[in-house]
Length: 150
Figure 1 (cartoon, helix red, strand yellow):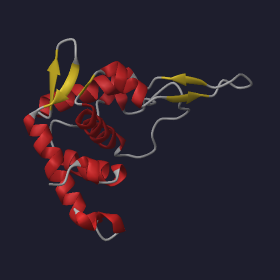
Figure 2 (cartoon, one colour):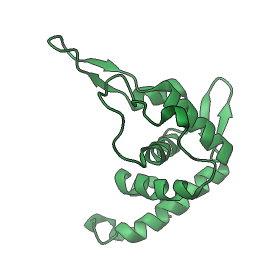
Figure 3 (tube, one colour):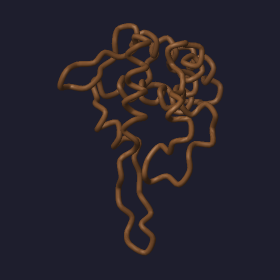
Figure 4 (tube, one colour):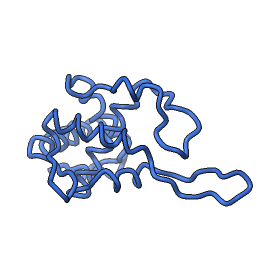
């Protein structure tokens, strides 16, 4: 059985994002259209489908970590802030983006909220990612020579 561990992350995230675009519960909130994804960024995202890509990446991270909260997700999507002459500092990503993405994924039925423990995948979300990884594996096999054994 093909799992997300067997596929390169970029291809899997793109495959999940394409499927999430068709879901009516997942859409960019009007408050986040022009927002930056963290204090370490200078501009807002230039890709018009960035919300679906972020939601797909969050789904993949929840799959890999079993359960994860908003604060940990902020750390995952953070980066170095350029402080000019001073040394760069690690900064967390946007909390509103992570929170709203989790809320939309809950509404779609892919993620469940556990009080005090963060979020975890629902059975629907797990099967969604497994089926998507199987579809992506069929497309990717020719590009990556080590994937023939799957």
